[in-house]
Length: 152
Image 1 (cartoon, rainbow, N blue to C red):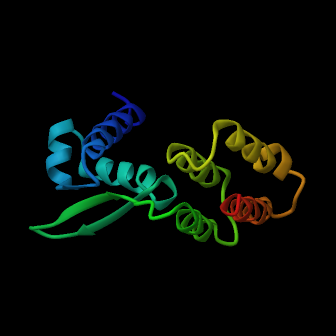
Image 2 (cartoon, rainbow, N blue to C red; image 1 turned 180 degrees about the vertical axis):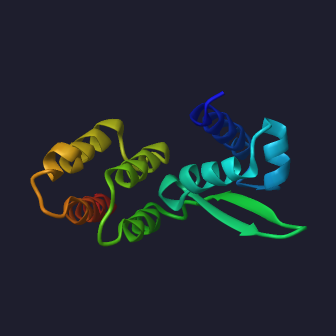
């Protein structure tokens, strides 16, 4: 089985567990044993698919009694949630991370599919290829759109 498929399976399993609860606490070695993979595969999945931009917060403790805790970010109110996403944009942002933010906003019903598509078209690779610092320009545009979304 390829790494990508195994990563998809592990991600799906963790997200299924998270459907019923706001957080899950796992032991990396137990999940690795369950899926017959190396523990670093679990790290990869958590580091790439459970990020704040995707709506998750991760805490971990290493050692014998160590754990990895994955928590869904709670939406207190729409403006605060959008502010949180704006802070994740920073001064520059890759297209992949920007798309994660848009997907997360759609998943939480703060953005419609058509709004997300329009926003994506404004920050996609073709448009940004015209600029010297595409990730920086993308961040400015995305922050501005999110600020506007917050008030409408």
